[in-house]
Length: 360
Image (cartoon, rainbow, N blue to C red; front, side, top):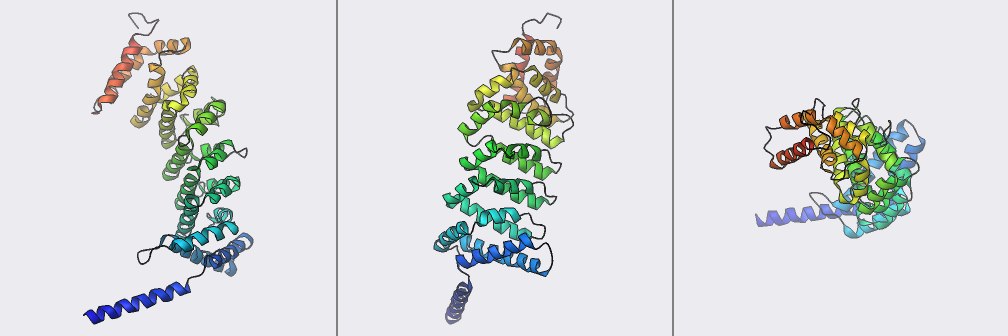
């Protein structure tokens, strides 16, 4: 048995060596990938394009194996370093991002490409600088969200989130004159549940990851982000004609943004608007319990504000009786002590607003 085991081990080692010797160098992988991508750029259909798709699939798979390895072999750190250098010299990030949503690319190929680009963004700072200098990459990836195939949209979304983890790239999204942020606000309104949810995850990262960046953006671009008129801004996302996912996740993100200490000035400005208050109160009347729950967490900021504007006090006082009745019956079956305490606090404040009479 020992002899048999030794023989099997020797054969496995020789096979692994043989496979390794057949692996192409990083320079070859990048060169062949560029050739395939060039064909995809110039040949719309036919045998040459099919061959290019197959070639790109093979190169992307080999790149991923070189970096990450698999169940049979670990990645090669030295070769991965060389691949990163060659990848940048070949400017493959832009080319791959441009073609990642190509209709004839397979799911595994897209996944391999995404993993390779993610590796570069995490391990190679020049890759981040490269993306930062080329907004076209982000535009291509955001366009992938609109693809009718959810797997394409989610792959592109994951890459966008990997990009915006880096402050310099996130700044491009927020300040790009080509409308990257506006594109993202449009994408969260998509009717497909998985895709809209993924787009909201991306929007959430853009508005919460880099404190100094997002707090300055939200304050200086307040009217664009929180404007009252459709089709832009949070006001549009809260409209009754929006789908359930958009309204619920918009309210949740709005609450997170307003309660962030870094956004204190933004919060102060938002809760001084009676129009904003009315929109949130409309959401409290929605048929969906989940939407009412998220609206509650925005509404409580208006009520708990110790320095309410006179117009806000007047609006709350006019609706005090209905609001107290709603709060008194809302989600009483839920075993959530903090939530119940918050409701009691709001009822007390609403019941003691200036201008209320005994009959109100």
